[in-house]
Length: 339
Length: 233
Figure (cartoon, each protein chain N blue to C red):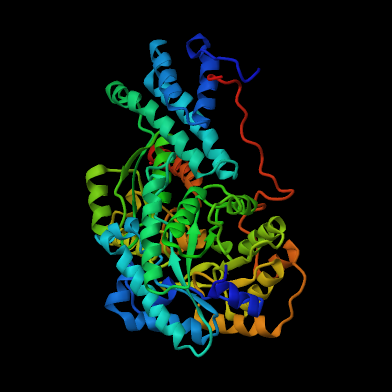
């Protein structure tokens, strides 16, 4: 099955994705607490500027402003019923920017988490989650997105539900998770565990990987873990934050410079990722340097962990639960009550 | 011991039963915890002792393994839910017997931020440690915190932010407390994925807590300091 995303990836070998959505929009005046998706209809010029920022910096692919455009998130803004509409408009604006870019650019319809914890631990049912993802995916497809782009997921159950939602909408997709807790997702999934889950899906993604999390170093360790387990079957996506947020003079500033993100991009490719971008804090100025680095520096061998630390800074945790670093064992029960 | 061994809680002596309740909390078995609490009550344990020795003791193990990356959010939520089952039985009895208060916390996600998974987790773990928790929910302007501090009289104020754009609002709350001269009446703890210790210090919080387990440890530590300073005053 061909898709503009897989075609462009095959053609170019590696793709530069985009950077931050939130950080850029806040710089354009979005107030914290407001739903960024409302700007798709209220401030479309700013959304065009957001997309263009990535395209003009050299991105081959950008994500639409629809991260929170699902019924569960929009409910918090009394707009649960606008999930389809806001997703569709996000993709429509993206389509227009991509089609006038003068080169092939992929419109990836962003799909973020529901923000709820799924059954049996939480209260969100599988059926309802699928329904919400289906609705968002339908909207993105109607707006002309080339692919759906699931991101920042923590729970394997939610990733599975999204896979079903994309299948129902008939939209090809890519899906990344966030590994921010001792090298795992908040729900405890390791990078290896994600690979196993991805290959267990009926509707497998076109590519998978990691986004956000705790910093560029941790993200690359996650990519290494995935690449070791994946062995080249599917393309791997790396979208790391531009360093760590710091509080400077009343504002939040990410400490990752464009030069550092350029090094990160090259290292990500060496780690085995073929779709490389940024996440929080990554601005067009970072993307330009990443583009330049990917185009001018040769692909090398995968870095050792200490090389990643030397280039990008320390890891947030000693291990990540893969390879030789198996987590300490759970407390063993003294006996069972129910045989 | 083989897997098929059936343990009858009521046949265990006190010490073994408490150990078994540690296991049951760890595995999130709510009914077993409720049964254990009822058995200890029948054996004339003080409700406060059941809370601190059996429940809080068990949750301390859960908290330590969560901190160390052995347990993750799903397991902790199940354990907290089991703990809650036991607490529901104990709560009225604790009030009746005038048991000492571990501490009280008002917690909420700051204005502009609608994320609540981390905040909920901290709330549950704090309850698991025996604290009374008043949850203000998401998107709280400074007025909500001030009002809750006045009406609830907590020892601790906890604030959470998951967005880099909402983090600075924590400073607005703390600055307002300073202006009103009430800052030092409370222990202020902050947390959230993008925060770090440096940030906590920069905005004038007492401590930054990396995760829910650290929040509990930090809260206990500051409560102990508070008691000591009250004694020496």
